[in-house]
Length: 114
Ligand code: 5GP
Ligand code: ZN
Image (cartoon, rainbow, N blue to C red; front, side):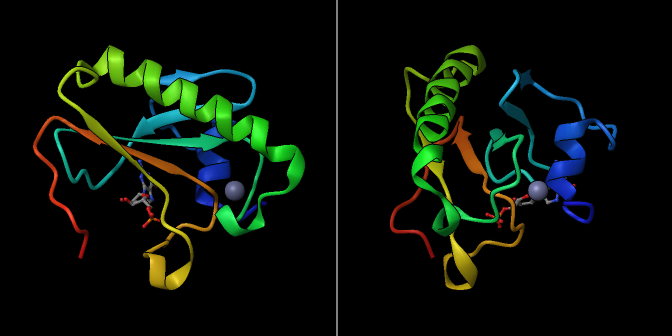
């Protein structure tokens, strides 16, 4: 996807520091952090949104959750708690149409979301 900002980050075309990378997943700091720890985890493959997941993608989603757990440990927020969020579609608050998972922590998060 040539115009997708997260594809460009995943491919290294944009000079974004990755806090984690493997052959399928990349993670980096959100440019507009909403908590002391705010990372984005993305599949390197372009999937536009959660709604567009296909059967073969669910193992990848599990891998992303495993990575989120690992990063929560590394970032020191695992013990106190954290949140993993995927916004889907316009009403869900999605602004970048490449599937991503927000990993938020380092402060007490409010519920319900706005
Ligand atoms: P969404 O609103 O789609 O759930 O989340 C998109 C997130 O991507 C936002 O929190 C926004 O700050 C972040 N974001 C958008 N563009 C960039 C970028 O170019 N670099 C980084 N690091 N974060 C971005
Ligand atoms: Zn993309």
